[in-house]
Length: 360
Ligand SMILES: Nc1nc2c(ncn2[C@@H]2O[C@H](COP(=O)(O)OP(=O)(O)O)[C@@H](O)[C@H]2O)c(=O)[nH]1
Ligand SMILES: [Mg+2]
View 1 (cartoon, rainbow, N blue to C red):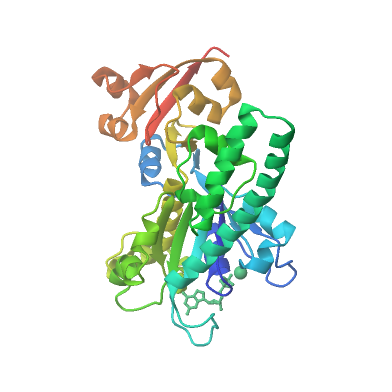
View 2: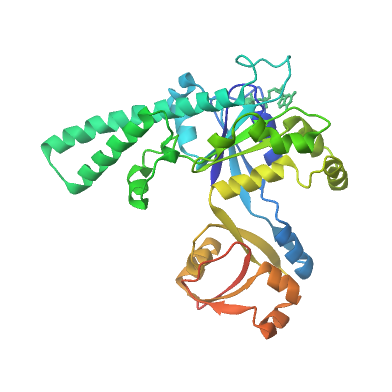
């Protein structure tokens, strides 16, 4: 699962990427159209607490991948390599400038909603071009030969075109799972879930400012659309946090009435937006978080660990993480009946601890 960091020039994309992935970025010897790739660990207090129970040799958190794409513009989108990088991501994090700093140029006044609309517009126009091109082909095909599948695609494309022409992104268009499958190959940009990340100024009232930013900049409505979210961070402060020890970070955050850094909130929101959840495997050798999509069955979750486990799946010993902590041991949990056996079709819940029994 990969999230593309997009936005106008000089808004803090690379700053955030570096902090998220703790990865140094060569500013010079790098083609500006090439994306930086990096992985961010998904912080998870539940896993940390389970690990305290098992004291494992290895502790492995879930991760999400980020791509720092060059600044987005109409011109850039017309370049094949740039557009291809962007099409390949599963979601977008649009970094929006909300911080004041006269030394860093911006297109006109600070106006997050204008920038949000402008980038969304570029995505919409790009998709519209794709849809029109495909429609022409499909209409030609239909003249030669009618088939139900081509007719359905035609109908869907006509609907998508009308939707895009009202300047609304495809992520807001209602589509059945079959429709989604039909358009998957196009990798439409405005169909990708998007998170608006307001990069705000530092201030002495940062906690309150972060909380109020989405409403203050008029982004509440835009962010409440389907497959859309918003949050505020302060890249400047996050950069300072990155230099501090864990204890100092905690003290710094609490002095602003905060419990979590912006990066942690950003990673978690990305995870939610992508519809992802975690389940855990535990033991003295390894405690680990695994990433699956909400709604997956136990047998598919087993497959996320290893395909052999999926093929030879018998049962999943299952317990919710807090019940296991509460019991203090698997033996006690079994005695209490909170540790139970589930079959193939069990829908895994966020925070389940699974032990897959298999015949392989
Ligand atoms: N004052 C201030 N400057 C920032 C902030 N975030 C980024 N910058 C500065 O803005 C400039 C552009 O940042 P960068 O991350 O390279 O932006 P990108 O072009 O979107 O990748 C750099 O000089 C950063 O130090 C912020 O929150 N406050
Ligand atoms: Mg950059």
